[in-house]
Image (cartoon, rainbow, N blue to C red; front, side):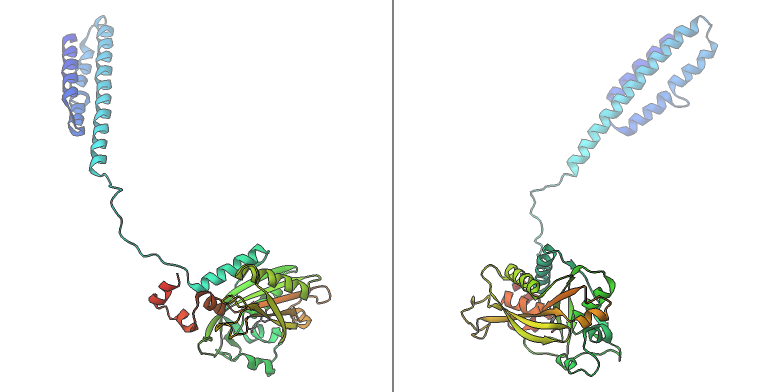
Amino acid sequence: MKEKLLQIKEEALKEFSSCDDLKSLNDLRVKYFGKQGALTVVLKGMRDLTPQERPIIGALVNDVRQNIESSFAKKEEEIATKELAKKLESEKIDITEPSKDCEKGSFHPITRVIDRLSDICVEMGFEVVQGPEIESDYYNFEALNIPQNHPARDMQDSFYITEKFLMRTQTSAVQVREMEKRKPPFKIVSPGRTYRNDSDSTHSPMFHQFEGLVIDENVSMADLKIMLNTMLTKLFGKGTKTRFRPSFFPFTEPSVEVDVTCPNCGGEGCRLCKGTGWLEMLGAGVVNPKVLEMSGIDSKKYKGFAFGPGVDRLAMIENGVTDLKLMFKNDIRFLNQMK
Ligand code: DAH
């Protein structure tokens, strides 16, 4: 039996050492350790040994088994490493291979203006909010102190959907929604699409506005002026001058229109500013106390100011575009030039 064991050991080690793939290694495992395996058979024969022989052979069996097992494990690891190396070699990726050319997109010029205005205002502590494009007559007009049959409604040629609902003509409607929702003090801006029945080279039935509203104790026209000067200087660069002209909006009192020195000619006078050196930028004003009260804000305690630049005009100036419709046609040749 001893000889038999030593013979098995020698044979097994020899076979393991010449084996070089996982499948034949597995066959060898079955051959030695399987149910009918050589070692298993020998172990079964231990029953017939005398009590004196049993511990001696037992120790030998253990030694042989450990020997074979460890050489099996070593071989298994060796083969796995080799096969992995082979696999890695065959699946090698050439990272120096040039990639396919892919065309780069860019943000739309109008999105870029909205993002810049938002960034400037967020830096000054404003929160950016959204309102619906289909708006009720109440939010778009009534609550902004433009009652039914008020002549101010003629300032804006509206698209009505039903008697009560229309495509919002101004983002100012968002002012009302926020005043109803919030507790002062707060500062919000709201960019978005607006709609009016108006169409020529500088007007499109769908256009964009950027509304701003500040409600706090003791805010005044002076705060509005400082805030707008800061915003417009950040937008157009140092040396930009502003001009505040008296105007009228039903929801602000007093109301102003704000011009900036033409960014194209620096105020010298050019085609863009029609020789005046100034460009009209936005409407603004101190919120009419009547408007505050209608939305549930105590006008004795709180004041507010609001502003609303048109976005499209800014994008046109920035990109030297003279026909606003080009912005909305999605002609890829045009958009490629706007990158
Ligand atoms: N909503 C006005 C318009 O469409 C612009 C405007 C004027 C907005 C004065 C304001 C404001 O917030 O205070 O012509």
